[in-house]
Amino acid sequence: MLTRQTVYNAIRAVKPDTPIQIFGGHTHIRDFAVYDDKTTALESGRYCETLGWLSMSGIQSKSYRGAMNPKGVPNPTMKAMSVKTSTASAGLASSTSPSNLTYSRRYLDWNRLTFEYHAAGSQIRTFDTTKGVAVTQNITTTRQELNLTSLYGCAPQTWCISCAPFLSNGSIFSLLQQALAATIVTTARADKPRLIVLNTGSIRFDLPMGPFTYDDSFIVSPFTDAFQYLPDIPYSVASQVLTGLNSGNFPSKRSLSTESFEFSQLNPSLEPDSCIDPPVTHDHLNTKRSYPGGRIVRRQSSTLTPGYTTSDDFGTDGDGK
Image (cartoon, rainbow, N blue to C red):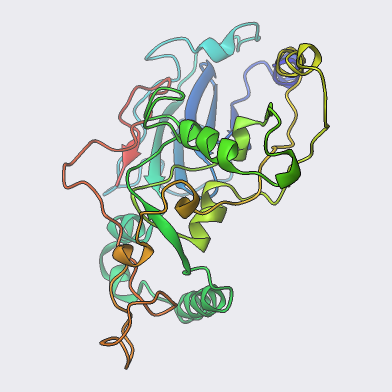
């Protein structure tokens, strides 16, 4: 907050009416914030999950000779202060003259269907470029070489980061709690009580119902940190650690994780092969073992939901196909 105020106010001190557009990152959110009538900020999700689109009209230029409002495409219509004064603008300076700027913003899910939908006309027929196809083949080959499609187990339900209350049955952190409680690294100390502290940032994505592959283990938690432990610490001392960490002025960027675990440790009755179709190979009539070539099938609900809807300073209409 202090850095944002310092930079923004420094610009406004010498350029009181210059439009400012901020592009943010690292905090892993989709958001569009209004600072003043000539300043907005856009952050487009996390890990290439979102393509953020921003357009502005009304900037005066002596060198630009193109169309100010191109035909055939949506043009910006929103004033920076037309919806509400952003809470992000608290404590910040503001411009000193009225603004003629208008804005639009969209959050596009990062996948092929989205890009094809927004590609213009005949471009869809040439959507696959030679370089693009080569990259896809390279990725596919590398995934097979790294055994990323190897099946670890089967998730009987979906556990998520934010779609369910924290530590509820659908919360991935409740699953993590069970997994950590069942994971014993030093078997000689299995009968000793343990207090495990970790950063919730170690979990990066939901775990959907269906097959859980080697690749999923990195998607859910991409860290290789191992347990670090101090033996025989009195509980009166150990119980103060979490409060001490949470009371710090700046949270650590270092995420704590644990050694990986298989779902079979939680539920030995799960049959991993039930999550995968027989692989398309010559011996598919005699075996159902999982290996690259098999078609992983995710079991998903047939009930349609609105999906990922973002609420920002311009409302809730920013999410597109």
